[in-house]
Length: 419
Image (tube, rainbow, N blue to C red; front, side, top):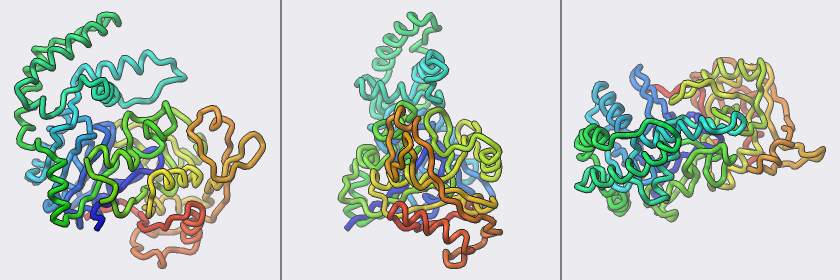
């Protein structure tokens, strides 16, 4: 019997996954973060307090739920310790946190290289990285020189760190940049290793032992489909696989265990950073959506680019991830507008391409959105708990989304989830 449910972003991230995760985790024994690093953020409101998570699975707020940072995550130990301390200050014991011994560690040289590489890119080619060291840490992982948590808390840490710092310093010398002192980094990070050591374990075995005991596991996606390193709008993507494949490789859980795959989106679209965004409204409408939806990054605080919902891209995400149900947030936000547009096809070189999405940048540059228009003015729907009680204008909009992508809407967000 499948016991694993998955929550994934369908567009460019920041869709409100944290709210859905918080709801589902109340009935889950484990919440697992599988990919990414502290370039992601989930925000949860509990008892009047806002919690912003960048590394720890947001399911940790349920004391009966075990929170797992999987092997596919790259971890900045300083950020992780700050999150742990913040939770403790809020009254959480954090004894339900587990870190994979196979997860890789982010060091100061990763952050430095992230910044340098972005600065060296031409202004038209900048990725829009958060400069948190995520990409360079994954580079080390696949170049097979990364330091995993089992090494970080082990006897070989100092030796491996000296090797890596020595190699990176040779490159920094070529850039004419200040070099790193491996002894200084070791002295600082040895303290972090001691703090985090009690949380480190073989999470693959932990999760499979739980599955054998019929535990329910919730896998939290970070970022989203169109930021996937393989299937997103390359090169304007993240450095990992926030799609369904990253769930298995980032946790050690095979596909046969997976039950529901929930695709999270907003009733409009938003994006942080560079790259194609076909339904962007770089005008007063976009500004209005941004302010109504408070569209500023959890991690970066950058204002997000905003526009209409793109059903073409959504159908691509549904196909790619095997999504079984949609969770649409900010229905209340879009309902404050007089008129709502929904992209139902692309026009390419004068012809209609229907529901064909592509990650080819040259193709996308020539695409224009084809819109259907809907009536807005949903009124105050923040207290509505059932779909049938929504105003007709809202129902028509949601129904059309379902028709276009062929997947039912199973969750509807009409305001911040608070408990």
